[in-house]
Length: 321
Image (cartoon, rainbow, N blue to C red):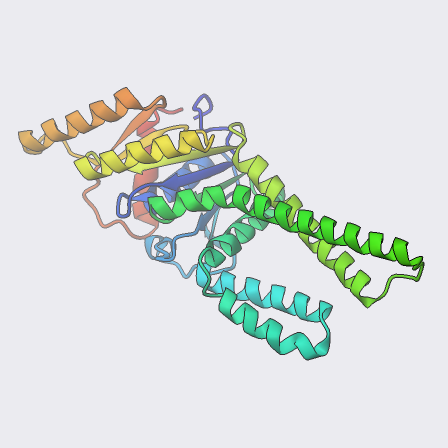
């Protein structure tokens, strides 16, 4: 596996249409890397949370050992958003006069249901996990939600940085206006409670902006990060995987490989083999990345034995790379 384009990536996303086997292949890659002596964390960002079901283990917000060298965790977008909004609300309450606390609470109660809240909170949690996880793990493998949700997540760090930049620019204008008014009045008083509050708000915004920049730089680094596109040799998954590949290229995200899962055995009906061959040929022609074919496994896909079998199949498809 040492010469493969995905070998040195410290972050690997697995994404594609729902039901194509993202969780299974993400876990198989984690096991394959663990066999090389790496410490690997598998992170589920899919609200369906199939990671625990696949491994037949209880996996939650903690980092649970799954097998030698592999740990797993599940990020619940709803719970993360709730905790994120609660923490921000507490911070803002502490910066505001007491008579405005209820108004702050009401505002953040509405914010929890606002579009983008879950995604921004999830990206924040993923960013913290990436920045902290590098110290403990060699590789982080992300099992993502279906295609549309994943591409929005990948865009969020850039969008949130732009939004924070706008807030900081507004803060700058307000500060300059306040300083100008004081200069006209000859006011040289020490900073009051409003000044202290504004300074604290600026500090929080700058901290958040720095974190989004760090996450954006890591996710956009083709040496560190790659996105493994998972698909099936069927028409609709093929079309969606090609569209996903185009979106990833537009975002500057490297694609180390496309994994075509559940390819039929040679004794399958000829019509199926022919159809799969056409889809595989189209993917190979249109994608500038290795295209790996994973055979269908005739066994229940749950438990350690199932993940082991898929890891074996994945490593065979990788040709020992």
